[in-house]
Length: 245
Image (cartoon, rainbow, N blue to C red; front, side):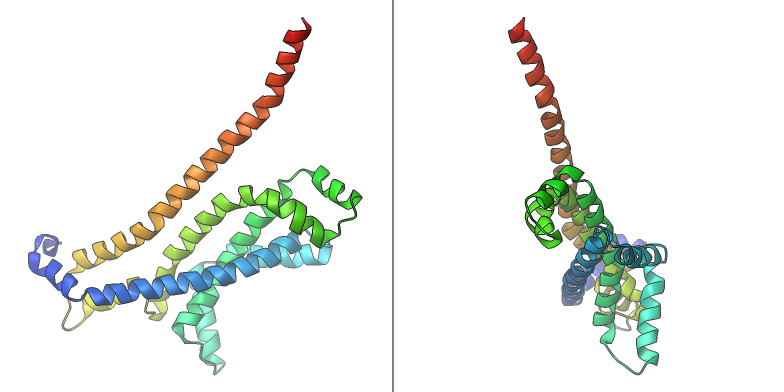
C-alpha cells in the first residue's frame, strides 16, 4: 500500500487514464444492453406470473427460482463456455450482456409481479366489468398504478446490475475492473495497485450513489404519501362527527 502515497503511482494512473475511461465506457455499454434485456425478460415473466394461467405461472416460477438461487458467476461461466464449446462466438461483451440480462431479468420479473399484486383486486374486477380484457386491464388500469410501486426497487436493480458488470473479469472482459487488473499487472504499467483500484471505485461510486440515493428518497416519499392518504379518510370522518355534534 506504500504506492498510495507515492506521487509517481498517481501520475502513472493519470498518464494511462484512457484505459480507465475505456473500461468505464465498456461497463456502461454492457450495463445498458443488459438492462434492456433484463427489462424485456422481467416484463414477460412478470406478466406471466400474474396472468392467472397455471402453465405460464409455473414457467415464470421455474425461471425465477433457478436464476435467483444460483450465482451470477456460475451462470456467466456456464454461458461463456457453453457457447464456446458449441462452436459459436458472441464475444465476451455480448456474453456478459446475455448473462446479466438473464440474471437480473428474474429479479425484475419479481419486482413487476409484486407491483401488480399490490394493486387491490377490486381494480381488476372493475376493469373486467367495463369490458377490458387482460391486455387492456394491464395497459390502462393496473400498470399505470403499479409504476409508483415498481420504480424504487427497479432503480436498485439498475444499481446492482451496474456493479455486477465486474463479474466479466472472470472471463477476461474489457469492463472497468478487468482493464484495471490489466493495468496493475501490465509490464509497462504494473504497480500502482491502490491508486488504480481507488479510481475504479470512485467511478463506480459516481454512477451508483446518485441512483441509490434516488431510489431511497423515492421510496421514502411514496411511504409518506401513502401515510397521508391513509390518514385523510380518518380525518374527514372525525371532522364530520365533530360537525354533527
